[in-house]
Length: 184
Image 1 (cartoon, rainbow, N blue to C red):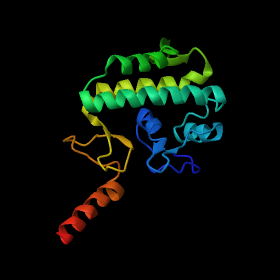
Image 2 (cartoon, rainbow, N blue to C red):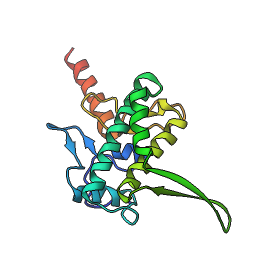
Image 3 (cartoon, helix red, strand yellow):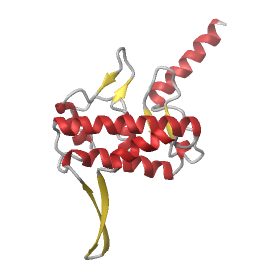
């Protein structure tokens, strides 16, 4: 459940895209990761506040992960695959953690371990992005509205979702088309 202090316009996308959505349209661009308190709100909205501490080191690490995922998302959209700089950026984040497999009471258990505490949330976000790519790079999308920079994972059956939120960006586009038609 999102933290009630989280005022971002789109919340609840998969972790990697939710991290990208800490930036949204405005002049200048709005940024929900401008300080430790805002980072703590993002951690809380993503159910990570019990596992991750909001501090300066974590804020710097999550910003690095956001930049790496942004570049990778751009490559996925534009090329359908990741270029070397995008892979290097993700790998730099992923180098700070690993999945450790252990035997649990019911069988195999996977536990994520980070080399330093501030890298757990960034590692989880980068790993989540790779999982999304595995489900189809074409489903990692940026909103089609020209004024929107939000990202979403298109889970629709036909893969044709265009808007981050139909009620906002989709309706704006419809209204703009209607206005042009009515004037013309």
